Length: 548
Length: 75
Image 1 (cartoon, rainbow over the protein chains, first blue to last red):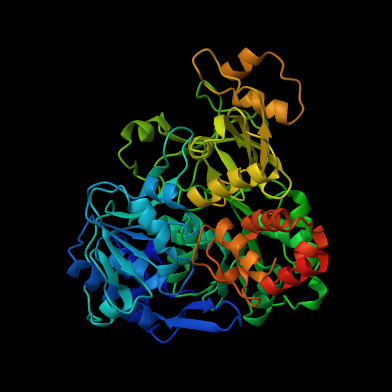
Image 2 (spheres, rainbow over the protein chains, first blue to last red):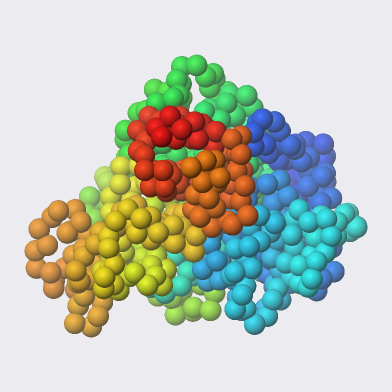
């Protein structure tokens, strides 16, 4: 049983996330408990942070940032790989009322530039290996933020500061700022179907919904070793990789390295992971890895596996039961929801392939085009009754887009689904052009904007197509410029360009050369037509296809 | 062609002109080298050296040294 004083449902006072995740556990006598176990690259040894160390270091971060002029409402971007310093930095900023925006360490300059900006007081925490990309992204910035470089030993020319030496001089005492329920906390960016990525703003109040759903869905015990493999730059990696377990005084485990099936198996076994939370693409990669013999590993400590990001097909579910001796529970959530709204949980029978049932206290409804509730079995738009505890409060600077997501008190998720007679939901697809690849959303516009920069490209259109490994893959249709020869070298150049400018997730898996990009009279790319062409289907009535 | 050619492929693929890999380097040591870009890297190596790897060979690469030894066996 968890200490009742850790349970936010027992307390109605507004709670600063940074305080809840470090100070409260220390005040309850958890100071010597391990909060974070970071598995090091290479030898897979552990580096740990106790709750007291987390408290002290996050207080130092809060003092450092406020000392440089950041205050309530300022913004700290964290552009770091998975590294133990992430946790005190994240919580320390929140303690000082500073918003935190995590940035994926695989982002290239264009993806960074789309997310960093504005004239507010900002700072960026990064590491020297990522600095070249960051400098390219900041090249055209009018106002430079303060840039803290984690592994530098001394400050360099403004605005570049050495993080650790400056941090070590700070006091370990800091009184977390009082927050209101709607004080902004974490800012995540998510791809939109048009234009640049949208800044999804969350608030401190979200911690209540995050913790509540975590307890209901994952059924953790206080002493569980919990590994959420998601990178902390994504919403799952923040709300379920940091906030939920630390708010309960648990021991979270993370791995510095990239996916490697053999290493991951060793980590689960060596450190006795009890709850594993990962993604279908990861499980599919494990399934395909012929070098693993699962019977050689001891997974007896493992008591539950959860999955999120894209739908979990029944094949993986059955594979999980066979090889881990555990069911894999599919959990659905979005950047905007910050916690699961639909989930398979250990206390309900699993229907393999389904998203599960609505989480307790959440009203999930399938709506038709007219906004009427669909009967069971009828496909429609997946909506959630607003508000819920961890609901986002804004798309930064885009009130129009935010308001457009809500109709008659329901949030329209952009996903299509159906609900069966037993209340289980079944994912059917997206109702926009966004591509879900390996559990990450990619905007076709972002990839097109990147490819069109190349002199070899005259025109381009990007779509998502089904993929057995990543659920969907990015496919680019390219009209080449005159006299450009299509060969493996050109293809490689195109892919490498997207990887280095945007990210590996946005890189097209397939590039198709085409004479002309089909467009409507108004110039809109006919993506559905391209998808049918790509899949070898009959295009049918192409005009009704694009108007649908 | 020698090991420096392979290093050039790494520099170009990951857009890191100063990158120096060694036979002991793994994906964990190179910014951006993940399961997705691994395929890109393999294609770039194949193109530069005029060789082709089998799926089984690609699965077995744990270090740059493994990759380099496989390249050498095909030259």
